[in-house]
Amino acid sequence: MKALKAALLILTFSLLLCSCRVTSSNSKNDDVLSDTTSQHYSIVDNGNVALSSFNVKVPDDLSLTSSSGDPVFISDDGELQIMIIDKTQTVAELAEYINKVYAQYSGVTESITDIEKIQINNSSAKRFSFSLLDEEKVNVTVVLYFWELNGSKIEINVMKKGNSEFDLSEIDKLVASLDFS
Image (cartoon, helix red, strand yellow):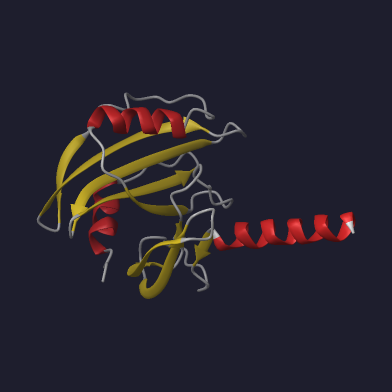
């Protein structure tokens, strides 16, 4: 009986883990920022509760994940990941949140409180980036965007593994192309 309960517990936990990551099923492209397609995503947290549903226009190679827990890096070098969450924070609270989220990694190279104000689709947004080393000592570049959309505070977190640098103007275009409906 104990073995059956343990098996059911493991199966339930596995299903919850699977539900926490929703990815595009389309074939990969060489140029991550090139082709886009309309996809339906449902963002869920670790308790299997739907937070939001979006019809988001994103490049095929991107993955949309929940905001609960730590970021999940895509294993392939050089691939991008987007994470969208609802969050209402001051800059100080934001800095504390980011420091907590990335505390398990080493080598943060920039001040997390230095946030640049930019325009995204005629909306005022905040953007900043920094680099860190993951548990395998691989360089990870992180670019964060924060702005208000239809009354909600939205964070888009774009991460790239590897030593090649982000072109921030290209990432700005990518973020601006996201279609929330």
